[in-house]
Image (cartoon, rainbow, N blue to C red; front, top):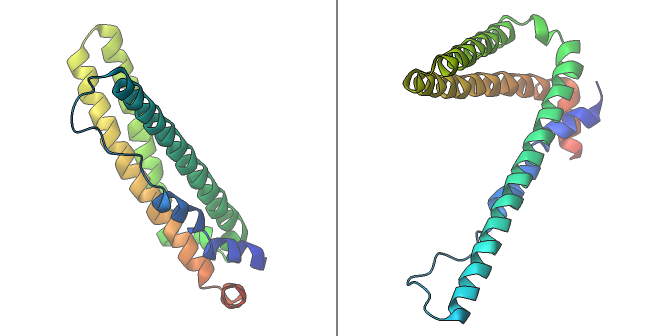
Length: 165
């Protein structure tokens, strides 16, 4: 097993710390602007807030992508080598994720059919149920990822890499 992958796992959450350090722009004004200068200042503040929001979203997506790449590298590298894919706990979690995925696909198809049939209430109900399933699937996937990381950190090479870090 490559110590760099294990080191990557130990530092997996480092990019996420920058998200917590980000500071939002100023709070909304306490009163409505009455002069052109106040309006210009409000527009400037709103533009800064919008830009900050977009940058934060980009950083979150980037950190999430980096995390997913690191977990996949562990899953397909040391975890697989150690026989982790055959672990009943991992198989059960991945089956749970696949089941949620199939349910989400069925809800999307049903929502599309309801949209074609012109039933907005049914479509809305199915979309809400799909969001609930997405949350449950994400939780199950996070649990599977945590299992992979825990098992990789428990490997002998991981302890050496963590000590070097």
